[in-house]
Length: 157
Image (cartoon, rainbow, N blue to C red; front, side, top):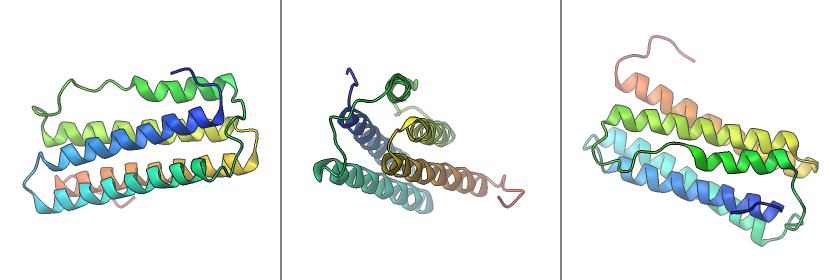
């Protein structure tokens, strides 16, 4: 996909949120542990909310979707599709799934951070700063949950 406008960036961000939902939905199926399933379901719902927010902003045309985006924004958005995912999640351990989740969330907040840093409009910058904070919060929650669940939580952070 060639990215040239703000709407293109929204399309990429929306697709990334949908991909995250699929990942968390599949990860839920990998465990019988109710606490893990509930945790993954909560993250899944938050990703659904991100998708709804991005779609609403785009559909309400709060911003000029035809606004051109600069080269750095283009490269950052395109990098989002470069995470190496296994062909199938079926044979992965729960540990592997949590590791992938952490990488996906780190990639998401990095993408939103870069877009915010290069945005020319203050409102767009604020929007993507907020999205980055949401994804950073997911990363922190996933890490803390996994460490606590595996008995590795030796600190509060």
